[in-house]
Amino acid sequence: MIKRTTEMRNPETTHIDEMSTQQILTTINREDQQVPRAISEPALLAELAKIVDAVVNGFKQGGRLFYIGAGTSGRLGVLDAAECVPTFGTDPEMVQGLIAGGDRAMTEAVEGAEDSVEGGRADLVARNLSQHDFVLGIAASGTTPYVIGGLDYAREVGAGTGALSCNHQALISEHAEFAIEAVVGPEVVTGSTRMKSGTAEKLILNMISTSTMIKLGKVYGNLMVDVKPTNLKLIDRSKRIIQDATGVDRATAEKYFELSQQQPKTAIVMINAEVDYETAVAALAKNNGFIAAALKDLR
Image 1 (tube, rainbow, N blue to C red):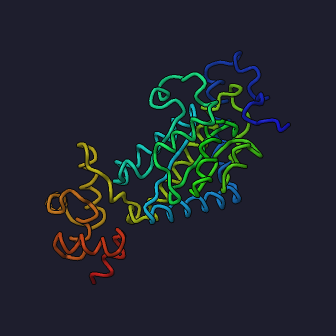
Image 2: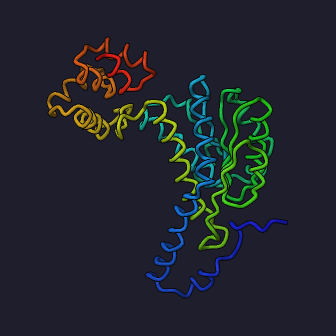
Image 3: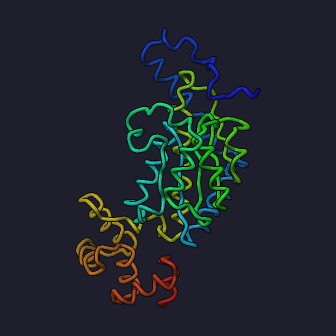
């Protein structure tokens, strides 16, 4: 039987209950520093690149990305999916997070939900999963039945599948086409995978969603040009993005923010190519939303 790293006792913290406050914090920080090192492994990044490319290919065919998990892993998936909407201007259907036990499980434990293989399958059936979709199962332990049920159903319908865990030879790795095993070592508090394992999962989900959106033309340079200006902070950011991408002053940025119907991407093309709204929109549509290609086409 394989011994799971996520359940092992950490020899560096066996007396953490006797440490001073500063010693506790120093120890936690030292352990946390292992996380980015684990994720930087070339083999892990190579497998991660395959997942990103598969997700991008699915998006181009009208597919969706589903994160599916339980507990902390499920919550992190829901968080990353939710943040794609304001950051990249995506439709809420495009990236979705599913958690065992449903919405209630975001704030409290739902008895037995993660142990249901059928639950993972049922949640994806309810979303009309198709062969163009991609399902990323997330489980720090790598053994969650809910995640396995979802991955097995995804493979049945021909959807893309990936597994994200924090153990070597994780069980969920056997149920997916692509497998990421970010082994960050035993937790400071034994089995508390919301700590280093959760941090690793959060970093990897950031990498997946951000990389896919970059490859879909939702970033220009390093600017989030598809940001949705849904509050005062994001309205201000949108105007600053227009300024940064075009070099215009604040007043001009505000003018084009309104002329572009509050679409920073369109405003940037309008200014840099010196064209009207309709021409900018058409150029972006022709070039799949990529600003650089649209500008080149208009020159």
